[in-house]
Length: 233
Image (tube, rainbow, N blue to C red; front, side):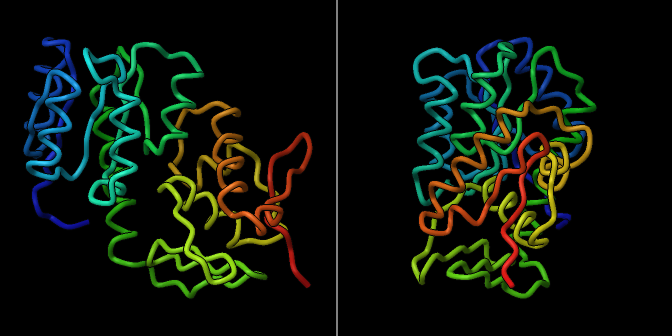
């Protein structure tokens, strides 16, 4: 990954946590900007686009989920890496955040070491995509996938996918007929030791099928195991 210093925006309303994050991120070599509410966070994103945003879900005013939704619906910020910070821990909040396009999540209280590792992983994966992977395009039926360009087309029409949806699709389509467990899908997309629920994986698959339209059935459910991409003869 590029040695250029990365800038991280932290949106967190708890002063102690904000100070802890700022201290450790600067110590780890990042430039850090901070915001204590949703409105301020959105303003700072637009003023100076960061390389990654750490986003608390429970914020005064505009909450983290709404911020995530707005960022993903804006072409300028649709690919901005987002890691959610949440004290809730409920499955529904995590699933909703991932469904909106967040790249990762960390629950409070969190390990600084784990958080830094997650940040490095997300930045590395984004960098790899931006540089373009040395892989040929995948053509399966009416579906065309350009791994290095982060581009998907169905019957010649471009399909907009979130970062996570795209990575799931590439993982499955790269090995047609191969059955992936939910754990293997998570591992392929986000790396080992990433804690996520089965339902969160199912949400990504459901979103993919819907967006792929006439090619949605290419992703097959293997009952009791996981998913596989249809094998064409």
